[in-house]
Image (cartoon, rainbow, N blue to C red):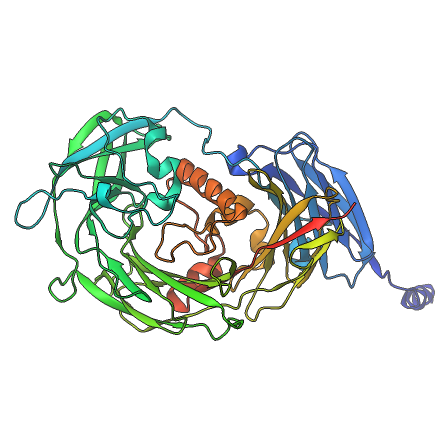
Length: 553
């Protein structure tokens, strides 16, 4: 009888409508700032009607306990770095709570990386070691192939030509322009007598057709191994509105070991035709462009640039195969590429395409859309369509707005197929742009959680893609995305509208990444979904126009 009364009493007891949730993890500096734990960062979490802030300890650790309604489905996390740290703040808005719930009361770990305002090329580690490869570059008749780099006219003020010749293997690392100047030193249209090692280090031949390739590692390795490519990147332009530039002559060596004890290895190279009509090692990959999702303002100008590249899997490196340019956003090209062979899945031909949209006068870049796909031995040659993602359109604060709120809410339009929006806010300075805050959200607006400086000019931009979920951004270094968004002025797109303070700063980040790691991060780095779609349906991303505003008092 007593147990029955207890049961009845239990049934009448109101069930709790709130629950306690713990969010915990660590805050680290960007890898280019050393990757150390950040002490003194303020971490603020909002879950439903509950909010809490804590300061990280010496190990960068934080733990927040939030008591809110059981119906809460998502939280927002903001991390503000300590003053004077040269780091900038991050916000993760509308993060799915279920991914961080735990049956034991504490949530899964949140690893947050804060970007640095001063990108560096230096990484901690052992002292650098160097070795070299040298040799003679010949054509099929046995004649030396001499570089014409001194005759190449730069397409922009940032292009690093003429290329220097290296006198010996002791050449200073900082003198190698591929690392000091960034990817603008990759092959440019019209150059002959080029040699590439590992996909990013480019040298030219001298008057006798000889080359010297310095190779350096910071990992204290006695030897490194990379693929090598050589040739003439001198395909000609077709017209004022379309161009196809590719290797007229080439040689590919799958694996070249380099001993980094100061030794110089000799390897002579002989070129062959990069022509599918005469060389079975070369084929074509058709691509057409579909800009149906792109808003087309009256009088807008379009530049479409496609860059196929060869990616050997057995050694590091990605080798550019050409640049194809058109003013027609619904045009097409037949790309000259390496013939991988039927069934070959160990190698790829990557195809990257940028659509640049500019104002009617060609002076202002009003947005870009990017498409990437991979082809292997199973689908190389199959028709490929670059169906571009729509370009986000910033709405508020308005362009050139004065007296804007010092705690603004940034808003933009929705983009079909977009997964997560990345919003960057930067302060304009006399020398360029400095990042202040980056936010990630699945919404079309986000409030800046900082109080901005009074009477100060800022620029902001929103980006998105079709693959990266909100959870992919947690634990990701924001500087990798900044480097990937850099747009090289040394392209056939004629550098139209690319000379902004924000793009200049991203170029510095890209150059630092190239020097530290040997490559510039790619747009699709990170989420597994992006890599899967590269083979199947491709990957898409888009950047809005840069919007400027000035805060009030």
